[in-house]
Length: 179
Ligand code: SF4
Ligand code: SF4
Image (cartoon, rainbow, N blue to C red; front, side, top):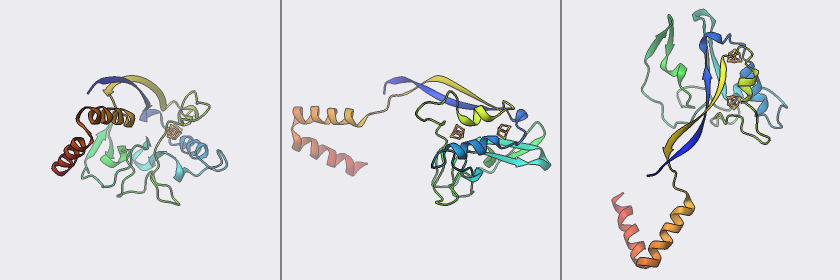
């Protein structure tokens, strides 16, 4: 499949600079409230700070994809003398923990990089992090080109024109049995 360039948006996290103020959680939940800014509830934030003052751990993590099943990973990492569990770094909304789930509906929450109209100069959590623990980066990466539904339709029509509808339907039925 052909490779295409895609703009990838990333929030870089500097753990040494985070002091657990939770301004990022507050603004994220307010920005995504309905109506916008009408309320703020950190439990609805798409960035959550794992906070353990006893271990001096302040770890902001922004939500990624929903996953239907929990993974088996339970490794521990020691970084600069502080112990983290594998789950601490995980961005998934997963069945084994409460992070990144809407407290009312239970639906998964996912960071959308504050994409909105008009477009934000930077994601809100980055703008509100006065300690610069969060920084925003855009970079170009090569990814496999996605097949668009309209391309599939054009391809199917071309095959039907060439081989006839019956033959194409027959072939697809045989392929789906093998799949
Ligand atoms: S706003 Fe910045 S310093 Fe405050 S908790 Fe979030 S990431 Fe940490
Ligand atoms: S980029 Fe926007 S949606 Fe994502 S965690 Fe930050 S404030 Fe929330």
